[in-house]
Length: 76
Image 1 (tube, rainbow, N blue to C red):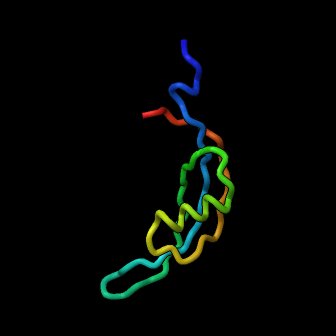
Image 2 (cartoon, one colour):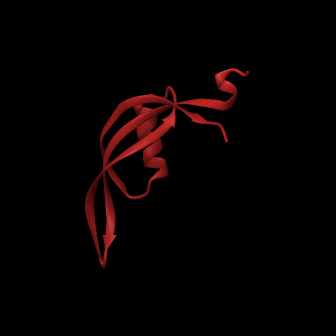
């Protein structure tokens, strides 16, 4: 039997609400999204916000970042 960290990684599960600019036909609209996002365990809220802005396009504003759960994911 092996230790849990050999096969699993700790994660934090966040509920994030953000506003993004989307293309609708020839126009651009602002739309609010609420999504569940999973990040490595132990990131600060500031780092989570930073990663969202860096990795999602057309984000105008992040309205809320709420840590919901701690979890684990299977290593690939």
